[in-house]
Image (cartoon, rainbow, N blue to C red; front, side):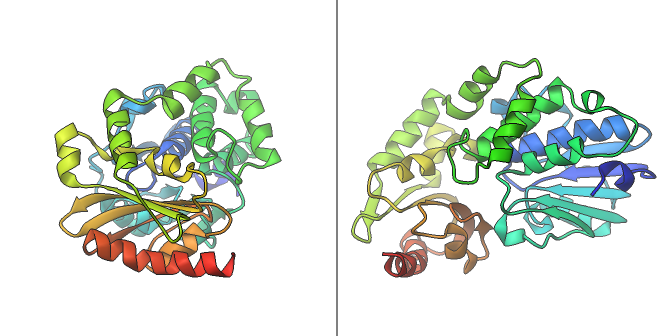
Length: 327
């Protein structure tokens, strides 16, 4: 896939990613958006995401993100990143289906075949940002590599890569990932600070909620599985938003002896957002697939309906089966 050829005659280009964007979603979409502005100068380019997370303030053009999805109709080219098109905001998904050319760039195993007319989907790659790095590096146009890549694009890609690889500690980190990162940090940005402030640093409220989630967690399946939930009342008490819950499921998974961590937060009455983090004993994507979810072998999620206990009981059946098979 060559980006320049895809947008050669485009007058309008849309870029979006999944709802509740994470670091990789922000990084990959922003990097692509900035690169498209270089190679499609005559096109109107719109980057659309659900929010502008303050934690991503190092992204220089964060304020250019359209959170209202104000565009009407389709685009000449629409890029869907870090998800299948049906995981985007409903308005973005509608624009996608109405666009002349659709392009899907993703690394989730549950979207291995892609959902666009053109697809660049590789589940073995650790992040969508790494895929965008490859596409920019290997693009064919009159620009040299030094002209294609700049500090703003490199920083965005680096943020995406570190967030989806857990700062290179997750099993989806490949030798190619480290090579890409080493190329990106050649550009003039303070990468140790970026890691600290976007990945590790938490606000006081975020730490309070994490502490509460840890205190109220419950282990089951002989201690090999752990679950915790934050309800809407707690969210309202702390005046928290979903982004404030980042990292809780990973902290639960870090507990010794745990093979599967489940974190849930209440979206509405009898409706929960569910996240899983696992060891090789449990395929997280397989566990949530029965509930319309997706993701990776070690990290996946879904939305479930029912009471808290019903959701845990229904999900635990699929986890218990895998633990028994892989014991």
